[in-house]
Amino acid sequence: YIHNNKGKFKKVAFFCTYRGGGSEELFNSMEKLIGIEPISTLDIITKEIKKNLHLKKIQEFLSNIFYTNYKSHTRGFFL
Image (cartoon, rainbow, N blue to C red; front, side, top):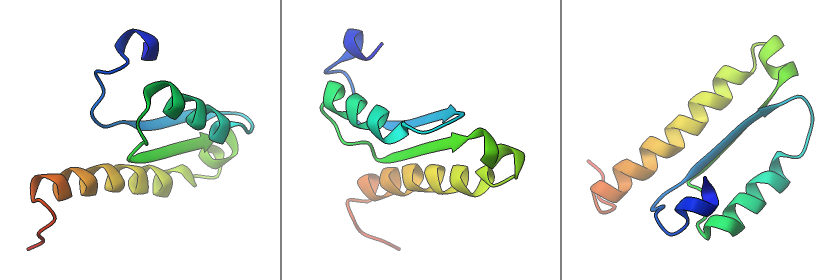
C-alpha cells in the first residue's frame, strides 16, 4: 500500500498491535518509505490490552491527531 501510494500522503499517523517489540523500527521504516514524519504513533502490546492499559494510549494517539488537524485549520491561532 505504501509503495503504491507514495507521494499521495499529506499527513500520516502510524499504529500497530503486536505481542513483542519492534514498533520503533517499523515506524522508522514506514517514515523513510513515505518521506513524511507521522503526526502521531501508537503501539499496543498484548500485555497492555490484558491489563487495560491501552485505552490511555489510544486517547493520546487520537488527541495528537485532532490537535494537529485543529492547529492546521486555525493557522496556529487558539481561541
